Image (cartoon, each protein chain N blue to C red):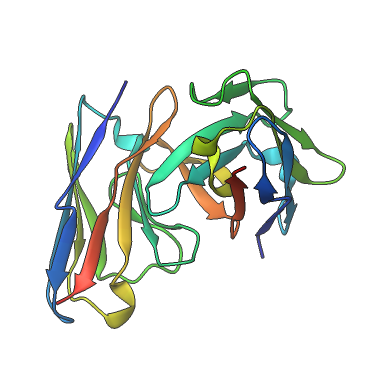
Length: 127
Length: 107
């Protein structure tokens, strides 16, 4: 079955860096765009970044643009999030999520949604 | 920027009751792009509904989605104990956006 397993979270001081990994299995990794979504303690979900199937297109939320970098290693079936210049407001559980592009032949509509999520990795930015 | 407003913030109901959750978009949303997720404490979100009204694999038929344009609804016909959770609507325009969630709690 589809599995997404994040790792790399922890406590880090403001201004430092951290890299999250999301190891995948149970599906053809290169066939799906992948996202990072975060959730601050007691708050809602916030989209962070997306990477295309081949890894050539990357988009970021304004809140992390210029500081975070999303990447993927097809051979290792792993998604990454390099987080630099971390701030206290980056404290959150970070989820990797698979993006489903689902064409419904009956209606002709193409549906987009997050169909699988990892269990999350907690990042705490604190001095 | 598209904003999704969910209401109410908290819904207090008894098991067996019907739950009606609302999600209003600041502008019209494509039929293809509206989804609902369920999140329980300490767990990752779980896909319930995509394309406004399509149930994801394994989702019980007591969950249903409806709506069009700017107004969307998630209905749980008869609440089971495992349904008490937070529910988020989500759309995909230039980037994915989530509502702030509705907490369904036991009365």
